[in-house]
Each structure stands twice: as C-alpha cells, then as structure tokens.
Length: 159
Image (tube, rainbow, N blue to C red):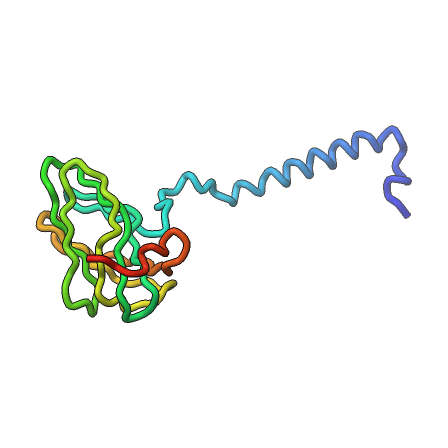
C-alpha cells in the first residue's frame, strides 16, 4: 500500500516540499568532502618543478624510448637573475653530465639536453641530479616519458 495514499491531499503537498528540501540539503553536503582542486598547488605539465637559488626549473621530465637507452631532459629553465647560470643534469649510470647555460633574464625551454643512458623505461620515475654552482646538487624524481605525440621529435637526442 502506498504511504501517500494514506495521507490526505491537504498534508501531501507540505510533505513533498519537505522531502524535496531535505533531499536538496543532503545532496549539497556532498561537496563538503570534495576539496576544490584549484586550492592545491600542482605542476600543470607532464614533469615536476624544482626551485633552486637563482633558477626555477619547471616541468622537468626525461623523454626516452627504453631502459638503458639514451634520453633527453625536457622542461623550462627560468633565470630571473642578472647573470647566466650553468646547470648540470645527470642520472645514475650516465658517464658524463649534460651541461647547459641558462642566460640571464630568460625562460628558455630545455629540449636539447641529452642523457647518455636512462635507468628506467617510459612510465618509470628516475632520480635526476641537477647541479649549479650557486645551489649545489639537487636530486629530483622525474618521470620518463615515451617519445610519442609531441615528444616524438625528441626520440633521438642531439648534442
């Protein structure tokens, strides 16, 4: 038997209105437990960020086709200081670091920084050692990306 059939027509309308109001309040409470994503700082790129004395590195990642093969460091180097900064990139197992000079007051893209041998395959994370004379040695965990899509042209490192 339907419960609303037992309720008089006069009482049914206020009960329906109360039920709708209660359902609206319950549904609106769902957002209390779902934080807004824009409240959290995150790198909006495929890589990770690294802040050092005199240099900001944004979207750092390595593009490489497979483990123990060559790769290329990508990202952006922002130097807001009045002098150029020499930066060295290396990973465990590579015999020589890749050196880059970031000009003063620039925000240059990094795409010609070859790494001789990457200890991980696409989808893995590796430890990238970033060194400058001002900041010393910094270690950051970066993703290894496959050379597909807009990274395809980076499949064969130059340099």
